[in-house]
Amino acid sequence: MSSLQVQITHRFDALTLDLAFEAGLGVTALFGPSGSGKTSTINAIAGLFTPDSGRVSLKGKTLFDVASGVNLAPQERRIGYVFQDGRLFPHLTVEGNIRFGMRFADPAPGPEEMRQVVEMLGLQSLLERRPGTLSGGEKQRVALARALLSKPHLLLMDEPLAALDEPRKEEIFPYLERLRDEAGMPIIYVSHSLAEVARLADDLVVMQDGKVVCAGSAEDVLSDPAALPFVGVREAGAILPAQVVEHGADGLCRLAISGGELLLPGVTAKLGAWLRIRVLAQDIILSNQLPAGLSSRNILPVKVEAIHKGGGPGVAIGLRAGKDRLLARITARAAAEMDLKPGKDCFAILKATAVPRGSIGVSRGF
Amino acid sequence: MTLHAEEWAALALSLKVSVWAVLLSLPLALAVAWLLARREFRGKALLSALVHLPLVLPPVVTGYLLLIVFGRNGAVGGFLADLGIVLAFRWTGAALAAAIMGFPLMVRAIRLAIEAVDPKLEQAAATLGAGRVAGFILVTLPLIAPGILAGAVLGFAKAMGEFGATITFVANIPGQTQTLPSAIYAFLQVPGGEASALRLVGLSLVVALGAVLVSEWLARKVAERIGRG
Image (cartoon, each protein chain N blue to C red):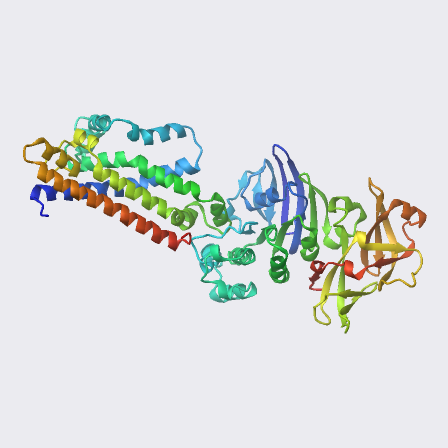
């Protein structure tokens, strides 16, 4: 299943890259703070940068291997790359840009395939325009279409949303979600924004100081108490698959999750649609008894699975709710007074408004 | 204003010499400019110095060196003479002298244009499947077209005005090697030649002004086409 295999080491002046990971179909997010070596890693995969040693193979084909002296040029690797800054060709129209890679692709995509990509990314009205006249979001959609029509076996995306403001990000997310579900190839998505990662990623590779500190499915990593320090205390939070059950007249939406129900505002998805709900660890309150008389509507029975003590006053608590997992962060003092330990049953209270709008993603179902 | 046959001949020769000088040196200037802009290699500083040498050498020195190397008895000239190509005291020699004198200006203009193109665009072309040559032709070349044009116009203007190296290398033979500046110089040397000289001076002005205007117009067109206008 893992069609991309990466193992590289390289010494920079200020950073030593030493990592290995694998990626299969769907979106694998490379997540980590700035300067952790994410971009160098995908540049090495694309062949834009040659590491000291290591090996990169895609679909069983060796692209780079120091031991056997293989180092294919970027144009021989068939890897699409969406750069953070777009890098559209300024002397070509949008159509000229997206056709650029078609002449080198094998098999070359036909007019029908181009029409589909143009339509999927909503570029019909932009074809005659020059890159200089496009907005940031439009540029990234063109860059994406250009990469897709070069018929790559792997798509690399380097913080494609980092240069965009929130409304522009919202504008581009649906395209990325659709791409994830329809591309049929591995996508490596570099980001330092956990909100983007939680929304898009199937798998997650967390990097720090040039090394992989944890990796696995997005659900596993984001609900793993031991991963919380790497993910970030404020940003950490599990993602839950949820299905839209009812749109209330008061604007609240009833969502079914495996361990109960949630009531959330601001959900516009159709009845029956599957969503990914992100619940921040710091927005969960735990209680030993079923609380009564609370204003919160979202109370779930949960079982403590794991407790991870960090360096500070907080502990990360891994919880199971039905088939899903949640991650809560509470103080070590509260955990001791509540006598929390693995196997203990308790209740998780989450404020409905605490779920940011950007954290509700469309999912293909679980 | 009517021109005498000798004056016409000088103008026609100058145009022929300049066009050939630019056409033949442009590909080499492009290659050297690319090397200087994009590659690191041993002897890069030396290559750069050699290219710029004609700018700082007295033209008469350049002309004399050409005579030594490309004259009938010179190392290269003798070899070329065996192939039937004679440069010394021929219009072809004038074209060579003009090309060499204009070369640094062309390289400089093109090099600046190449350096202004973000190498990341060439990387993007590579990830889309374009090899080095295809990437250069499809991305770099269109983007530096205004610089190439500017270099060609500068080289042409320099060739039209070249005097010192030309007269040293190929002398001043009417109808054969007498270019516009050589003709002006010759007319000024004979009594009663001022009228002819003045007409050629006017002609030089018209040609020079025309070249600059045309190049600016072309540059604007190209800038519009590549979306930078």
